[in-house]
Length: 446
Image 1 (cartoon, rainbow, N blue to C red):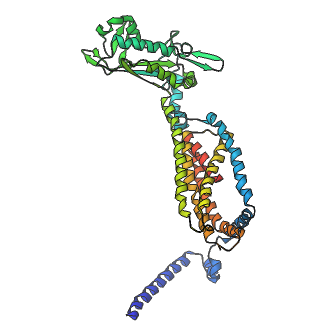
Image 2: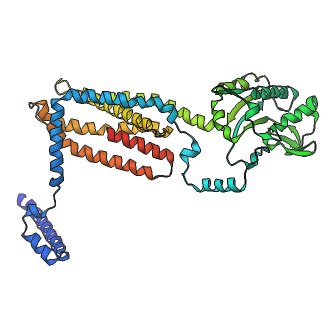
Image 3: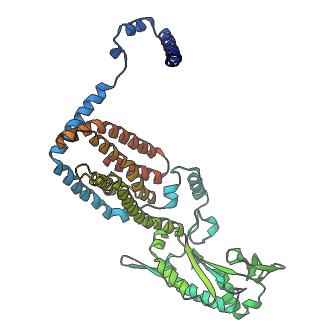
């Protein structure tokens, strides 16, 4: 039986040798004659292409560096803490470096939409003295209130009395910028030297208690010598023969001049909320502004920080798997400081970018999760190489051998990761540029 089993194996081995000789013959046929003769005369170890000429010197350098680290460990323990503390002071400028404008950061720099807008601005300029929301280049700078009826109809005298009071309170809001107090009257968009009114309130002020019996035609209502479009102001209408029988909601707009976007940011949200809180007897009032999406977008940054802390805790718990009963071979502290090192890299790199003046976009707040994930894998390589060294050797020798074996792999992976993020700087989206710049710097610092 043993002889019969060996025959197929020998036959298979013989066939593999024939295939190898066949491919070798084909390869030499494609090579020039002189080159093939020279390769055939070369020794086997000389004919093969090796990378020892590059890898060996680098490994020797890292080996010497590892010995130096093992000889003077406190320098490499205290120096990163000091450097991180100095560079981390850049977080003082975090509020000034925040750039979360949705259009500026999340649309292409030279996108067709922006070029078309420039064309419209040049050929259809606005007239500041005669404001029209239909001639706006953007959504405009505005605050909007929506009153929803708690009953079947909102077009009642009681509701509109509260809306008039709400209108007065909004116009009384003011903003302090330095020593100057800015009022709504000085910031509002104007039409014929007056702030743009809410036509639905003008209609109520004209008809008063008779509004409920007035036949309001929809969508256009003749008011004086002109027609008013009620589609912007009244919603959820019940129409019979183009006359509004009931409505569920009324919307009020308050437009500011285009150059007052920053002023709208300084208006505290609490002021607008308080305007809504006092008028909940009949309508339910909610508010929004032209910056509501941006404010909500920026609020996500605060939600990321607790999650990042939880991630650090989970990572440390996971690394308890390195725990051993032997105190000499225990690697829990090594794993813990590996995670701590990733945190120092984020602190140092982010602080340096903030010192330089690189914009901090909300997407950058997600990069620490990525740095923690791709940065801790190097720690596994170091621990694996450390465990393969001789336990009875001195720390300097073990660390030098660890660096000799692990540093090349770590350097190559770090270089490829950093290169991949730097390639991302070629994108036309500013938010992606900031993310790639912060992340690549964190990875290289790690």
